[in-house]
Length: 128
Image (cartoon, rainbow, N blue to C red; front, side, top):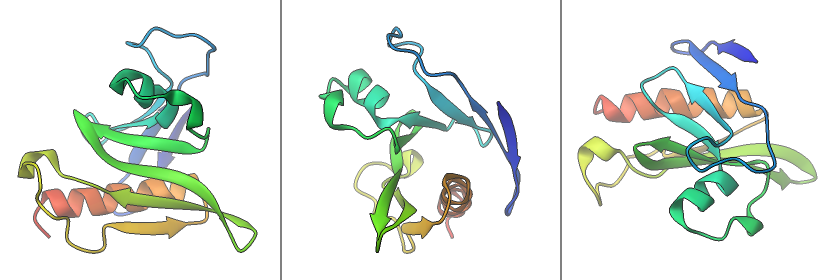
């Protein structure tokens, strides 16, 4: 499935089918068209990182740009599902550089959370 999102720019997403057992070099993920940034299931990222993947929700994603730069996950807030996103680091800036606010947000859908994350990630990479 391929989807084009709109926002400040357009993002093309490709979803790969889930599989029970995949080699670590092929894990289910969403490719975002801004560079080589991946939206990958946290359970798959946990296997790659050597963490225990069993306590990861199916609605929890790591945002990866050579290294983990953020997270998008679903949580229930006042009985309604919401998608929370957070920007954790910018690889080009080096380790420990604080991300200026806003470095997190909430959306009603996964697609809205992806668009908000993508917009903020690009702003921070450009120094805004």
